[in-house]
Length: 79
Image (cartoon, rainbow, N blue to C red; front, top):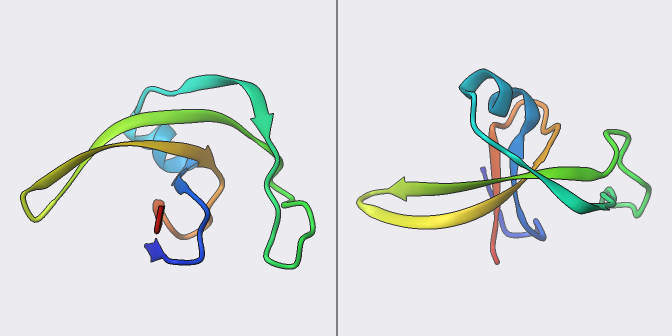
């Protein structure tokens, strides 16, 4: 999912586990807030995944924050 309102790039925790994608623990958790400013019930981001994503022949290295996304595997923000 491409989301122009997203403030970063994210990958679903379940997708990470199913795909056996390596992650790295952050030294400081990143708090997550909903659109209305309330804290997200899934909690803070504590891990990231460093990946190379390819689309239509273009490859880009990207750092994705690992969190629970529900039905989406990834959310790519317009950063």
